Image (cartoon, rainbow, N blue to C red; front, side, top):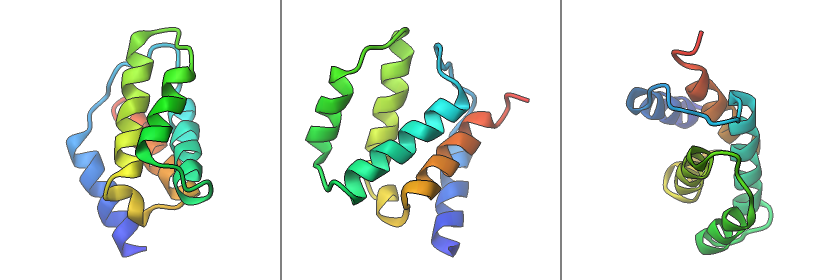
Length: 100
């Protein structure tokens, strides 16, 4: 639990409100959970995850950029310590910072 909290604060410290396109912070969190399912449950590779992302259609180019960043975190060192739920929570909370 401490590791997850530490990672959350580390991620939050470098993040600031970013453009979302047509997505909501809930959408961002849901995608982070989905990407973590790909990693933990389906055990796909980073390259396969990016290929899945490339198959999606986006209403705004910033959406693909944001989701690519999430895939990078999920499939990087941070993702080793997250589970499906915590990944979604971290990115949803991070997105909501400064949007109140």
